[in-house]
Image 1: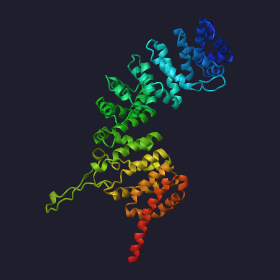
Image 2: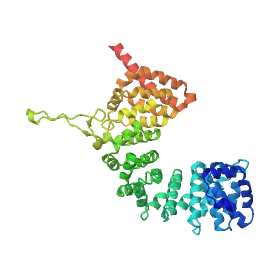
Image 3: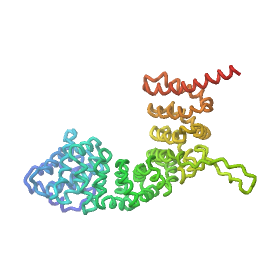
Image 4: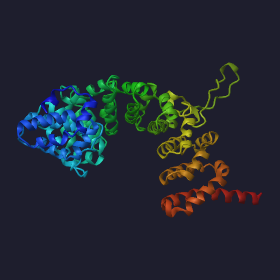
Length: 489
């Protein structure tokens, strides 16, 4: 075995050693005296860099044996270090696949996670042990959402990992960031208060600006996206630290995953209740990027961008500058210059002043989402289109949707959408059909779809059937009125 340790082995040689049967004897040596144990674990650490050998270790019942040695309370540091190195390699790229007994039944993963977290509370362990344990913990948590919940709730995972952000060693800080990103999807509370102390948030934003650390950049963006949007202290601090510009740069040149997470961060700056935050977003030039993501991003990015455009568009009617009718004058030189009026909002619109979806050329791209027939993106598309129809002037928005041929696409959703998506489509159609003109234009087509929904409500859900019946009643009311008018005429 000492010869194996001294050899410079390439991947092929490592695989060959596994094939000739060295792994079972090595596992037997792990149960022997301290010297043979150390020697065997060192050899196994070397051999476990090969996927085929990882399977052989698992099939031979080696994983519970290695974990047992690792978690012993009184054991030499070198033994713990070798076991942690093996565990890191077993989980690298494979997650929990090889964390099994010899009969392939899974090990008690929640117990493993709890023990791995407890290692981080021991201030005496060296970083040579801490780092592989953190890497293994990250791979395990990425593989099983249920384990993440248990790690957070039962083992106080967030509070254990947060202090690692203050570690001097960059590798430990970066793994901690990735773990917190993983944890924050399920339990984001408590992280904000920690980040706002000292320069912790500033340190994260510095990495967010560093394009050479793309993987960590992606994790930080994801972490910030998962933190509560109600925490305006965090949003304000990010603005102060130039974090919004960092998000913009990621959307321009980041990796696909980083871009998706950066779009997630942007939701905290586009909250419809905070127009000033929205204005910062628009003035920095995010709007054209959002339109482009709807047009050619990933499915996730398309849905996110459509939702963000919807957030901005929700305030357009409040921001529109209504034009007063010019007073008559006999002096031609004082006549008002004709200014284009927004068809949806009835006033002077622009991207920067009113966040107008039409001025941003976003409407055709939003409508095109329905052609893909994907629930998530179509849902956000409907939400965004709904912002064009508001109570004061429903006709204007309905007319815009009619002229863009959006209403036909919305009606088609009633054919292919999920029950929840159909429900959103019905809500928008109800707003459109408040205007008699469009109730009459689309009435005959709409009745076919609505009639089907009202009769199939047992399968689709009674609420959907009731919603369809309400819209159908709305159409019938106009139909009866038209017939009465014709008879009277």
